Length: 388
Ligand SMILES: CC(C)(COP(=O)(O)OP(=O)(O)OC[C@H]1O[C@@H](n2cnc3c(N)ncnc32)[C@H](O)[C@@H]1OP(=O)(O)O)[C@@H](O)C(=O)NCCC(=O)NCCS
Figure 1 (cartoon, rainbow, N blue to C red):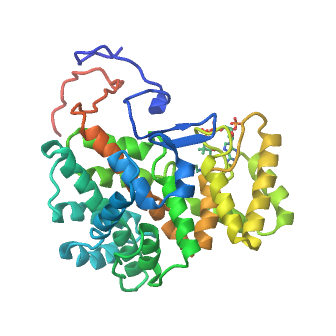
Figure 2: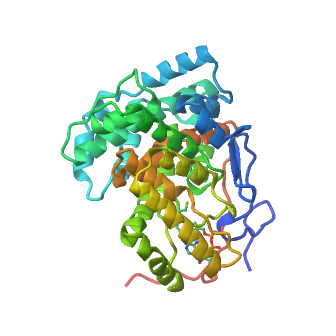
């Protein structure tokens, strides 16, 4: 029997807070049964098909899509923030050299923290809405610069300075490779990034909001969110879906490989979703993008998708298991020349914008998020034993 130490009655929430409404939001939502998700009042997939990344970023943090004049101003404002302060730039080689894990996501946490203090970010509690928004732009705009620099340093290469004249996605690819990307590759990555900006009240978004509710600065909120995203149950690993394609190898091996895994109780990476019971709308768009590139890898992926869905429908009837965002995202990123260890970091380069919108919304509400846990240990107070 728990002792109620709070002034309010205790309510038991389900495990994982599943189905618990904890706040209201105007940022967006996911309708799992309909296979639909939206940013503000617009279909996210339609935005990805028709708009540039910066337009959707503007929509998320300002609440409206920009007109031509606002677009030019916002693009210039964010492009100017891509360059890193010298204190951060000079620290990156040490951060990259200290890392013993693949990919730059853990280095991003360290670098973001440093960027926040180097830019003098103050607690959101102490600043007005305009200053908070400016802080989110300053941090988000620098994320691709940090990620690509950390990646290149890890490969023994020099970082590539950002270019102000390229859009967000094209500049990201440029900083990664040192070469201006082919327009259709830049656009494919841009569409992936837009489709990944936000996706309901997921664990990293909730984390960002919990930290924002304490009044901490924007960088602190984003560092926590990156930490949450890095967990395998969340940030996923689009690279794991590609590993599956590699492991199957050839079309004749699809059926036996998949059947054996599913009958052994394994999960096939890139299939199933906690919310969607229909096809994941992101998956549909990414498949179309992959097919616009064409080639044997894409044909094989589409064949694997078709066969796996059929086998899962047979072996797991009624579960409605379809491809999720990870499956074709991996294929698209591979086609665009992104190395596998940059897949989850690329996800983070988009999601920072969604986290930022959530931080701004949360910061406008001064109520701290502070649930309670039911204590189930030995009944206190037990006398503290004398030290031996
Ligand atoms: C995404 C995921 C965690 C969602 O889980 P969930 O909605 O909680 O699904 P459940 O755990 O309720 O699973 C329902 C049933 O479908 C099965 N199932 C779910 N995803 C499966 C998959 N990818 N392959 C094979 N079987 C799967 C489960 O084993 C379960 O079967 P059971 O009822 O016989 O036990 C799960 O589908 C999964 O692990 N997918 C693979 C990993 C992946 O692609 N992650 C990226 C997500 S964006």
